Image (cartoon, rainbow, N blue to C red):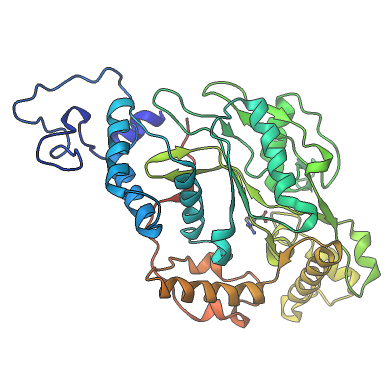
Amino acid sequence: MIFSRIRTRKPVPDPAAAFAPGCPLGHGGPAGQTVPGQARRTPSSLFTPAFTDPDQASAFVRQFHAELPGAGNPVQREREVLDEIARTGTYRHTPEELAFGAKVAWRNSARCIGRLYWRSLVVRDLREVSSADELAEECFEHLRVATNGGRIRPVISVFAPDRPGRPAARIVSPQLVRYAGYPDGAGGWTGDPAGGQLAARAADLGWKPGEGRFDILPLLVQERAGEQPRWYELPDDSTLEVPLRHPEYPWFAELGLRWYAVPAISDQTLEIGGIRYPAAPFNGWYMGTEIGARNLADADRYDMLAEVAAWLRLDTSSDRTLWKDRALIELNRAVLHSYQEAGVTMTDHHTESERFLTHIAQEKRLGRETPADWSWIVPPVSGGLTPVYHRYYDAVDPATRPAFVAREPW
Ligand code: ARG
């Protein structure tokens, strides 16, 4: 249960003790302490008192105003927020707070090499949307806005947050666009093994699986706890895909490979100032290696290296011939080349590594650290050729907020 988990995570001030005399911000004493001379009230709802952590809310409001000094009166806003939490168990972000929080969650993403552009995130405020049907419709619109004819825009769509006694809808699919995977009965797969579970689940719900290697999975949305998710076929005009060709080898097209334009993570919770937005899909653009060195190359994904090596007539008799490495490079060249030819935004690992160091330097000038996870930042090919390999990074504090966090079970 999400509520009890949140309630027991850490003691929070008793709302009955809010507005104790003496504290200008209306804070009471330490957690659960009764203010002398005041009777301790029993909360009317089990969930109301501790649903949104007031300390998280305060910290966020202060950060917002510290980074955006022109944005109004911080003391007044903090008082307002704490009062709203005391009355309702939670509070509502202003559209400005929401946009700031979403951008900073990106800035705080320790695994992302593409953070230089965190300010440019397009924030779609869809907090009024909570039904599965409407949510799916807006996810498709998200893809259209993000795709932008190939000039990919980083976008986040923020749907209704969890409220006391009313957990919000969840997107079950890990990304808005994903390919299905089907066990081939001989221990192998057709399609993307990473899309195997979702394909099976969608089929259980009534989706008719195709038989292809690149069948786009329907979007699965669960409106309420305990309900079955509903599935929605993605409209064609929301899913741009790029067929893969090689700049020099015409045979490469015969491999029949393709990938989609927009990577949009949809199974993480956006947490801002104690408020949890479990449905908040976000996207950037691809770095070539994600597709060329992982999705199409990993042994537990499309596993294409042997086939590419065969076409290249490489000596595969021993690992020491570096046939995998050579096939991998040609696969990655094909990915970068094809997106470029198709006019779809994609970055390469050399460029993006440089940009990330620019980002770190820029943040440092602003007095901020850039926490980063080396093992995620260093690209999966030619690591040592990129400058991000040759250094360490500020430590990652898992308590940092705003952040994208793993979604809790209902
Ligand atoms: N690596 C994931 C994929 O290949 C996408 C993760 C997000 N990537 C991004 N460039 N924003 O689908």
